[in-house]
Length: 217
Length: 372
Image (cartoon, rainbow over all chains, first blue to last red):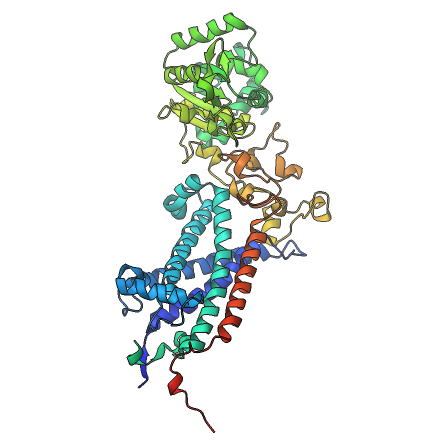
């Protein structure tokens, strides 16, 4: 009998969709800041000013969302837990990882049937969290330069000195493209699993529910 | 009745001004110098007499040495207008040694340097221009048979304070740029822990050097510095945040090419690779060449010359971001990024098509209800 599992709790879903919105907005405004593709006809306009304002506002929103999600890793259910993102520490996790990897590379026929994240996806999300944290830190390190000796500069200014202003910008910019690649991958994999697992992979991130056959687990 | 012109309205005491005049310095120049330097140090007006007092009676010994340099900083200083160096420099400081302006040469000059170092041990101000090559045991730069490494170390260790002028002595500068054939280093990496202040820039702004010397004369210590050892009064704000073209940046008006309409109208040079947003210096307020102009005002973007490793990290000078290592010079980060995103999309597209034709991997096959 198929059973309905409540997998993605409300905070997980909220954080997910705030992250989606933030990453899209930050990418668009960030790309604009890097190479402004609109030229203002009047000096009285404030195009770059608004773009930067939006970038910084969504940066704060994104930071709060990522921080909340990390806190939820210690509060939420076992699918949201920090342990879910390091599946390969257990023997079973390693086996499932290989099984799933072989499915993706057409060398194996079976999908790892999971209630929450599959081990390959979970590993990717660990990397994504690392990139998120890198973007937050590098972003606020650069942001802090408007006020040397201020809060952000005092906290993160050492990074500017260590990495160098320009390299930091290049890395911050490059990670945006990595995230763009991830989004393509993420939507595709979600679609594929929705198709093959028939467990509501796609609708789950809206509703929180997945339809699981416990016998298959 | 006295007119305003006859009354000493400056905060500097009359006796002090008379003493200065007796030494052949124009009082008007002296007042201007003290006022401008106090302002450059971001000190309140009430400090003008203190500064004047210190400048008048201290006359510190200064040794100015050059290693791997182009003498650009010496040139900039000699053309400084506050004071006109040629007139005031020898009155306000006691320049014991300077490769560019000293009359002596050869053994005489070296003897003078050595004597000054011994005589004013722990009291003199050392000004270093140029980086120090450490490759081949320092053989790339020797003065009177002694390597720059040995010479610099000795001078720094015996100085009251060391002022590094220009990006080369501060951060290694152009000689230290990749591939750094002479293994050039900055003074602070050659002699770590010594009392060193960095005044990077290519060249140093003479106003900042004068102000740093005056600060030392007035307070007996070097001014407060940032993480890179640069005085906060001169490097405490980003160029971009004090730029006269900032309004155009915020508005969204950019010059796209040198000489285009936007460029002629003085719009922001951001898209021409201006590094003002990455660089800290007081160029927009103090300016160069007697306060006449500075690069951005003259229509050329900042190249970030006062930042560490500027030759490597701030280039390409006409692009916003550095070139991505390992890729061709024409590849920008965005081209590579778009390529990456496109490759991902294609790869997963192919994967998706292949997956659709895959048979027998879909789950719960037995539970799918076939409707009539």
